[in-house]
Image 1 (cartoon, rainbow, N blue to C red):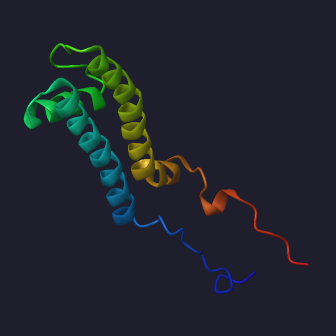
Image 2 (image 1 turned 90 degrees about the vertical axis):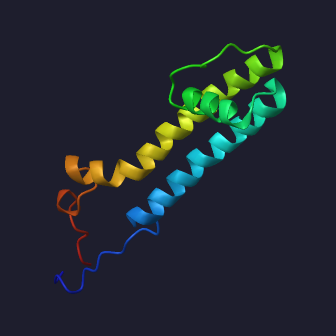
Length: 116
């Protein structure tokens, strides 16, 4: 197969700008849900609620004690959701770069299909 005949098609998410935008939207949506949840459940100010959400999302734990059982349950659910989202967003953002760096999925590592 000639080099001109083999044209590499890019995945729709190949652009680092798109991956960055989707990752940012994922993380920001978790922070918005966490901020609103702590504001409504624990009656924290928006700044304190955002700070608490960001501390939980980065796996550092709550920055202040939670007062209600509903707030504690919400914080527990948010911890699983937000840490998983941050890890997934980082993998989505940096996965193609690390795959190329480690040679996973590199076109030179896969045999070309044989012509019939």
